[in-house]
Length: 306
Image (cartoon, rainbow, N blue to C red; front, side):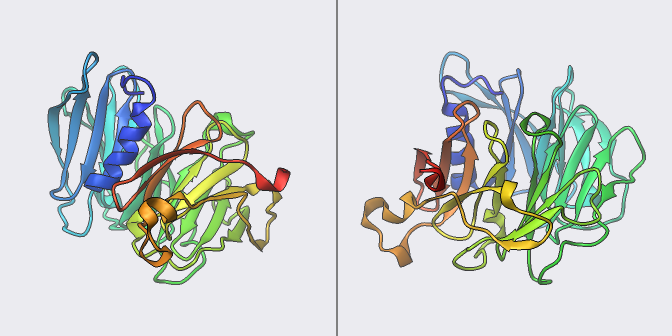
């Protein structure tokens, strides 16, 4: 984790996504942060000051995918020589060492699927989610042959998706949560990606107005809880243990509506939630950012258990 005093790491990470439309990932134990985003098609490496709040640019990685409408997704391999995994499409996926900027891995595929999510799982494997809903697991020690979903997840051809893998320490087996822009949420077992283990329709007010805002995150300190945002002015929290193999109508355990009421905004003109993240140490604390440059740090209570 970045060496930023106190709890400011997650605040800064959440705020970056809001203000600069960035994807970002910390380089563990190195005091570095990797970012990408518009404008331009570059990945930037920043060093966080240990004794002050100064953020210094260290280096820039030239991305291969240079398209106005896409920017590279990033994730970091933690090792003795940390590496930056980045790419806007499957065909442009590659890893470079943070210090030397030497390329150490390339997908070598002509597959042009645009990426919505990249997530390093361990020293040799990572997961990807395409905007169409394709999920895949990749072993960088082998030639490109990802274990992936047979076809995009069910839904409208106009639907866009993002995903996150639950950490191995958060349950008996890892689980992939995939979120669609119309509110469909699917859970996959990484050992068998042929079909969802379960799925649910979340009660969203409307389809996501901007698929770039879609976000699903697993709670690091709670079993089987996740949060979603990117549809409106709220963040919704769910417990997935009650879902079975059939599609269900899900009801959130809690909905954060704080951004609706900020500064006396009317509901119709309230800012959109652009990002959220869980506090790494406090199980029921989240941070959320909105399009009006507001940042919230908030706790939630399971109202169904009260």
